[in-house]
Image 1: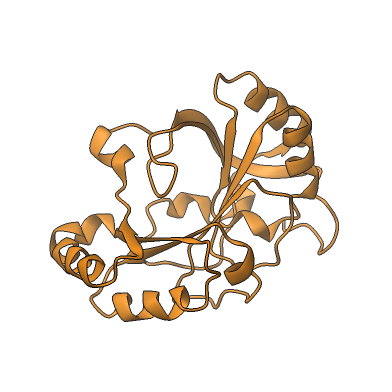
Image 2: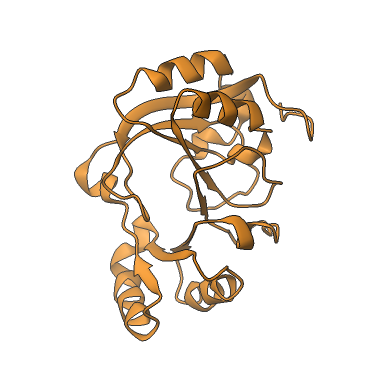
Length: 207
């Protein structure tokens, strides 16, 4: 169940938590501990973790347990992802992780109000649910998944609203990579503010 607005969650539905390398975006290749929360109502038809959508399918886990497990890893980077993690108020989780000297990274579609104090925010808006305007000013990274050629112009509309210090990434949707990759390459050549993001963890066959 979604936490009440403004009330920091004390437990969270956790689909999985694992140590790996960040596979996408600005921090690609860096070791990270991922906490994947259950629950999402954005509804991307190409989502590769649809099993995360139903929060009730995943056990509620105490914040203290999540922090303890994160602290036991060699990496100091903790990525909170989903699902859509901002369905829940993450103030408490963020604070407790940072109290242990861990860096907090968020991956979000931006369709719920921001909670938590983040060292890095990856904002990945989707066509299926409108993002909130606040993310254009606070996100460190804009990452747009490209499934159809028309997604490139849609991506640019979002980029035009981002603050000047943000990093911009175009990422081919995995099942359509062969078709859209050449289009992305040409677009980046003509719009050099953008960079390519690849799902390197899939190429490497790691979580």
